[in-house]
Length: 349
Image (tube, rainbow, N blue to C red; front, side, top):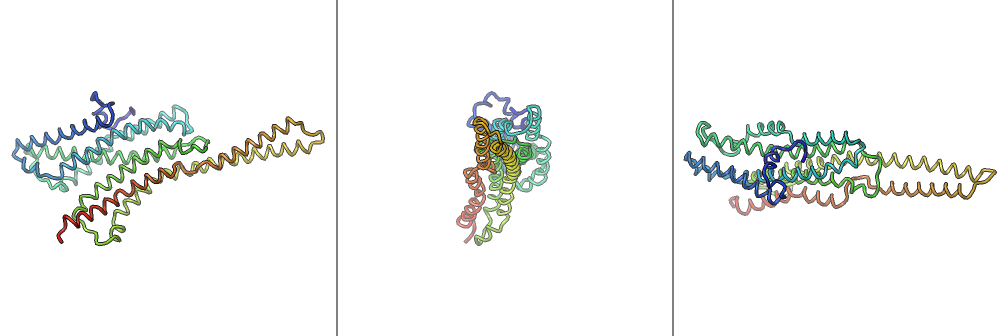
């Protein structure tokens, strides 16, 4: 486990089923959300607000949709970070103490409850009106409803912070000093970074999609150009740029390392070439052993030069690009589908 845990995992890790896998955790967290809904049901029943509660249609998708995604996502993200962050030690040019300090920084960043609380307070100012809710806070139902709204806000803020902290983590990883060693399996060494990046992209674009679905149920795009020039395209572009920006930092580092290694090979090659010229031009002549030693080193350097030149300068391959593209297209596909659905079934002819 990371030394600092996000609050959801601090709670659920106290249960005996925490290490039983994702399927069990989905069930546990569903029961947790169901308990929250059922408490609201009982409070509304006692206070005579059951009809309003059952027809408060925004609550169900927020609890069993958005909240479930965040709660299960927190478990998956915690496991992914625990598994992948440790693999970065072989990439960084730092000792074990420095890496442990870096790992602790990443852990504290993701588990920052204060950051989540600050985001939740901002959401709490605006969400009640968006939920079409109004009730006297001094009644039992009113008090619980406002608490329920804050719980939802706090979980949504957790999801926002998970996405933000994940991006910051990837960015910090891209800014660390890497070891001066690149080869044909460089992409494999950065597999953990690409995994985290895909997780961030899924978080971002799923959140973007969910934010668009409800408003679009009553929206109507008159033509395809309206889709292309809507705020959706800005969200897609910002997400793509934010996803790929850390890789540009890694790319610059790999190019710098590659240039330094090639310069080193070139300088060493020139030194051995000079030794060969001097040995061949020597009046005493060169022994076979000397020539073989020099030729062997020249051949070794030529192979190293080819290996370094063949090493990739970007820490991902075409499979990563195809997966990222598929994730990026999620909001656009949903946008078009919802528009067709709204025109066909919801809007008057």
